[in-house]
Image 1 (cartoon, rainbow, N blue to C red):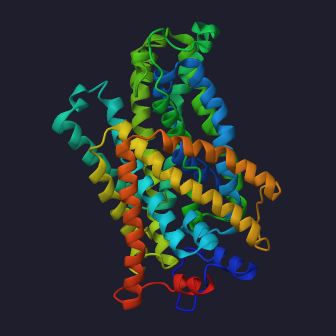
Image 2 (image 1 turned 120 degrees about the vertical axis):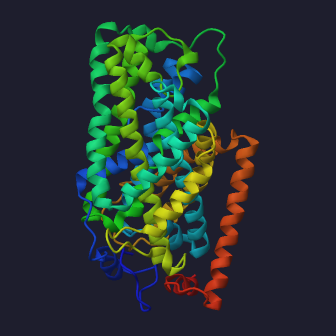
Image 3 (image 1 turned 135 degrees about the horizontal axis):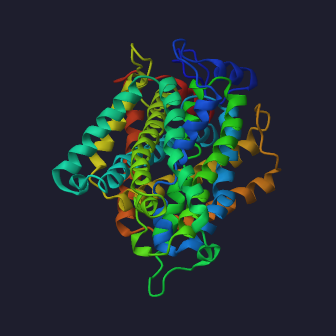
Length: 472
């Protein structure tokens, strides 16, 4: 279903091929479309944004496991997620993304629950980026280490970045291109400057003696740095020719992401003596001093801030357009889909996301990652199930891009990352279980509350959910 507001006679989500083609081409008339290059960098910032934040993988398990993690995990996790996204985003190219997929597969209840899990994981994840920026800046400006100055810096950074997002997704897309190139440039310099100092034997180090491995932190760090490939699907209604553009963008963004992680990691671990206790967020800046001098440290600090901006903008766009898409299909009241008269952006979605970000910004970086990963894992298990169910039950649906595997092969492809998702959930702390259970209950209550509002006609809804419930 496209980005345009549906009329009272709009078709249900379970559409035939002709209706689907019409729906995918329908977008808001005033919107500027995302082209291939901006979409590549938006996906890149949804997933990575550079090697900032990968340091904890070395600190928790040593160089060898960190290197192997960033080499192997893309094949067992990132590639399957990207392939699923490519097929479903081209088959159902509307704002809402994964919400539409679960809705089509299992009905409005599961679509709503998917929306709750993915939206909450997205906005909680948003809170990590201002925190990550400040963690880098405090190395240069110690005043941001704690207390009121740190809180104010996070608050004003959040407000400014949200306003930038309000100015339009096309602007955000081209901003992401510039931010991506500039934020990666110091790591290109770092990698080349490291070559004379690299000793390959450092890459096979299992870690310092006496330092206990923190596997929970290790896998959470890997997962956080390599997930969210499907988030850009909520922008499908804003993409120029999504059936052609999405698969290409996912492939190129995947290559860029893998290189941006593994090359600086090999350079930094190979050119410096290991001190695991120092491998925490921001340590790349200290490594730069030893390899090239303070000038490169400051360059990396600037790059971290720019990367944080790109990460925030991409994630906020995904969250805001998810809200818009959920309003378009009737999961949320129609007013949640309101767009700005000046910039044509979903200002309600931007405002709601920003308020939640500010509410959870007091959490520390590790707690943010663990909570995001758990909620995201729940959503991804449902997403894999939706993918398999739609391939089996809706074989006649037109798929401009189709994963070239039969159903048994697809099941195996999804089982491997699903096992990793279950592991991430099993090793979570009790507080993460409690928070996730509470948010899931709230998501279920929200669905039935919306159903009550719809039956009582207290708010205006699009009618897609009602028609879909009849079909289910």
